[in-house]
Image (cartoon, rainbow, N blue to C red; front, side, top):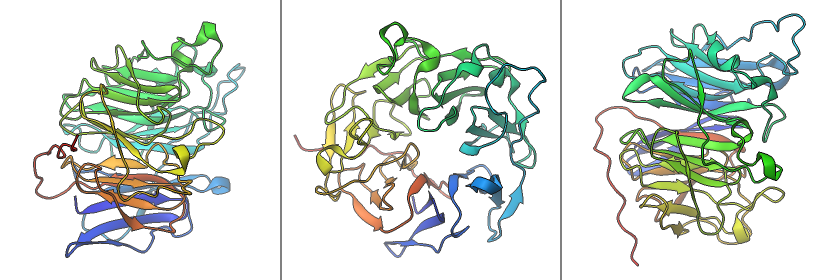
Length: 376
């Protein structure tokens, strides 16, 4: 990886490698909250979603080779039917996730939003359509928010083998899978446990607060979920989930999976709920190479005293080389590792709070590599 994107509360920054050093650009959209960023490897375009509060959500596209951003359409909810008992406000609050469609779907984009609607574009964001199949699933009006006061879609996992197969993660409504491009959906939370609910509801599907879900590109049936109540892994495309216990804490928000090895994943542990800071004030990254059977807590180069950085859902990313990781926090720090997380170096400090990071794919790509094994 030689290029990354950092979306923050006060602009979008680019991190670029040149002459062996990493340099940070001046911000795009200076002063504006950028809730999500996407680089589309299919055509080289970059998308930035802005969360302008009183002025609403905005979406901009920069085409490959261009320095100019163009404002494009945003998802728009239809009017709520007269007499509807749905308490949800059918108004776009924020674009929380953006993903490209399959390699065989040029121009297709997916957007996950608050208040819990999924949208699809077939023309690179020039227009959007609400995915009615998910919006109309029975019980959708009972979904509730996790960190926000309304439900939202934060994870969109397109199956590289079949572009019509997409799994989405919600906070708080679990995981939903379509195998027909969005016409029909099935809840996929078997095995998850919501320990914050009353005992009779801990296994209920649509109350599961999945903080983040990622898919392994090279082993697409493998999904990892950082959940409010712990960590879960699925090896059957979400049809069942198995809990994994990590050291320090199984609570957190971010998760990244190796692009070729579904047994290898990274997490950022934190103290749960009321405190939401690194355990013992020391930042660490939990790393498994064997599907969660064992973990190493990686710390070299990360602050180990008086650290209060929290890494949001989209604040951790692994590049296509399988070795380069980027992590950034609510306290405005960004760290890079080029050896699978064993050693980290600070590449930015005093940034605004970071909402999302992305590794940019482009040009000739090396095959994914496994990080070297830690000494025992």
